[in-house]
Amino acid sequence: MDFYGTLGPSCCLHPVLVRMYEAGMTGVRLNLSHGMLKERANWLYVAVSAAKSVGVETKILIDLQGPELRVGNFGGERKLKKDTDVIFGQRGIPVPSILMAQVKKGMRLLLDDGKMEAEVLECSGNQMIAKVLRGGVLKPRKSIAVPGKIIETPALTSQDLENLKIARHYGVTGVMLPFVRSEEDLKCLRRALEENHGEDIKIFAKIENMQGVESLAAFMPLADEIVIARGDLGNAVPLWELPAVQKHIGEQCRRAGKPFMVVTQMLDSMEHWPVPTRAEVSDIYNAALEGASSLMLTGETAVGEYPAEAMFYLVQTAKNCLEKSFIGKN
Image (tube, rainbow, N blue to C red; front, top):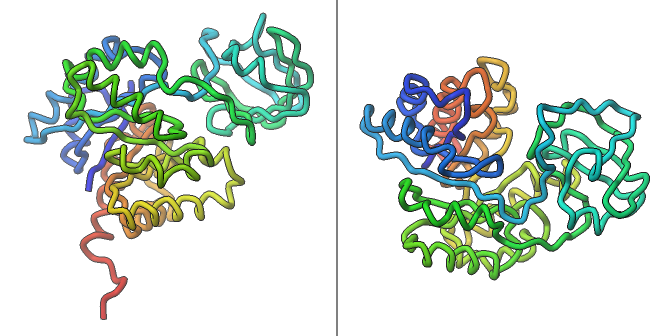
């Protein structure tokens, strides 16, 4: 079983990464929705060095921008207060023009994996006004989604293509493509990898909306591993339905003999607390019990206060399931 930690300012120090590898981490994820691969090369160098020092040959995943919609860069962060209006687009928080062209009055906007929510009040040309229904602090390059609305975007951005050109040079072993919708998305990624001598780089297909869930059987053969990415997937369906969707995807993967990963908020409380909740360790245990081949931490290691401790609990809980499960034993 593989255990991945997301690189970020909290963990990208040699001693911290050594502790994470000693705890059982087998690979790292570099989130490229916030920048270019070459700009984060120093993080990869530190991760590889730390892995070598403890005898681990680390796996390196890069998570592309793909077709996911995100707010742009607006400097610092913006506090969105409930029942206040917020401007998107011109003279406001920048958003993709393709989104502006397709939203209408009354539609809901989910920001940063649904942490914040707003309702569109007005939309004209290059500006949109929305009322904040659920407030919070919005940072640049966070996700923005419109529940129930399919907005067609290219599988790979220009930044993605640039990053894929140098992926092999930086030792990348796998590429995560967000919001996979069809076979063509994965064919597009495979062509780009082959054009840049990345034939041996594995493809991780992230399932983040119902379009991906419904098309899974068709594109599954083109992926090396399926990723149940519960952040945006939890925006696509009511949260109380998310566990059933996760189990459905896992069952399809098991039937096809396809490895799958579970990710997002595995140990969310550990961003600010040194021990997990009972619900979180139960979540990890169940993911391992249901056959996940990989588990991944995101904010817990990238920006959390206890990255090494979080990795320890992730690995120990999953291994306890694999080694000492009472299920099926007499």
